[in-house]
Image (tube, rainbow, N blue to C red; front, side, top):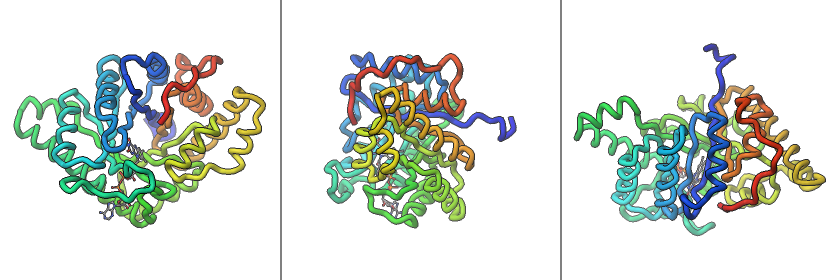
Length: 319
Ligand code: FAD
């Protein structure tokens, strides 16, 4: 397949609800997202491992009951190296083969980041630990080695087009962190959300000039809900463009707002794909309509997955 005709990768982020088994709306969303035939779905991990059980429950149920390839997020916050290794072993025993390795933010917003006394300090160290655990398991068991050849461990990491607000780092430090993650064995990166294609393209350009070779997938939020955009601005420090916010707030009703937001997001997606992005990762907030609307608008949605004109159900979960 020539690069011109190749379908970019499509992936979604989900977060675990309090009770994975009694969350019918989430499963409805997952079925709709599955119909879009994504390359993977990633499942977040609460600060300090607060969603350890629910992340594992959601990831393993996705593995068991759907055709989706789940990626489990992992963080190092307030956890010893031994505890992190234990969590990793649990995921591997459950058949999980893909991870997004993160340092994580401090559990209290605004507090400084402190590593656990026996813990890991960076995402790169977590990538190293994941590779070590996998090597040990393979060395211990020939059958494990065969399975690992058939389904290799894949490790994603984070990248920051608008700087890492939580970490207060500079562009140079962020690129260095990306190089460290690559050297430790990361396979690809997914970015924090951003609203202008230049931020992403500049980061990729600088990363390439500095020796980063792994693919960097842009993470994109469907910009349809002004309240959600403002909340993510608080959490990530990525400012929502004032004019986008004003246009969304001035829309006549929810349907008009959604159309406007989907169009704006589709323009961003087209710009990053035209600029060479290998795919897109959509932050769904456990809702499918807007994400599928964006894919539809850029011609990346299989016909069978077209969204209906029904609005999303009321939000059942919050981040
Ligand atoms: P790191 O790469 O370890 O960087 C952290 C800081 O350390 C930076 O300042 C960096 O410059 C510095 N640093 C790294 N290596 C070195 C080095 N060798 N020498 C000196 N300084 C160094 N958080 C959650 O809690 N749960 C989630 O599920 C989650 N999912 C996310 C998904 C994505 C796609 C993204 C982009 C972020 C996500 N986060 C999540 C937030 C993330 O945990 C925070 O942004 C965190 O502050 C940074 O994580 P990191 O993995 O990039 O850390």
